[in-house]
Image 1 (cartoon, rainbow, N blue to C red):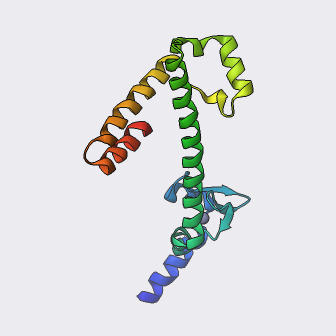
Image 2: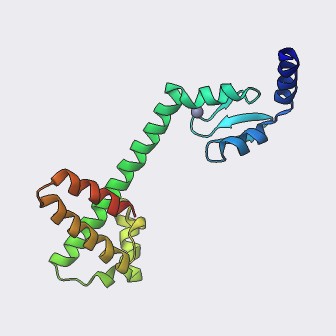
Length: 159
Ligand SMILES: [Zn+2]
């Protein structure tokens, strides 16, 4: 009987195409191309015939390291943009310039051309919201439990 099951399994495995594995593991992880199953994170083909090979791949150090690298890079990019936005708001506030001025088309094109990441500066109402959130974060941070405050701050900003 076990031999029969083994045969059955093999038969099923051979018939499985990369597309099925994409469905099974998620389009965010894999894509099918040229009859191969590609890992989106590592950008390399993974043997799709055996399910175990794919599961193993997802657990490899190389794969997880690539994911961590991606997260770190995107966090760094977000942080840079965040600083730009906050400093911009602070500069406007200090100079008594209404935040609405960032919506001015000439101002906007100036920022896009001359500020690194200036194209990603949100509209005035979003800026105000972000700034207020940041201010309440700062209050939290300066409160007794700074760690909790900064953690809450991260959560608030990522919303
Ligand atoms: Zn991978």
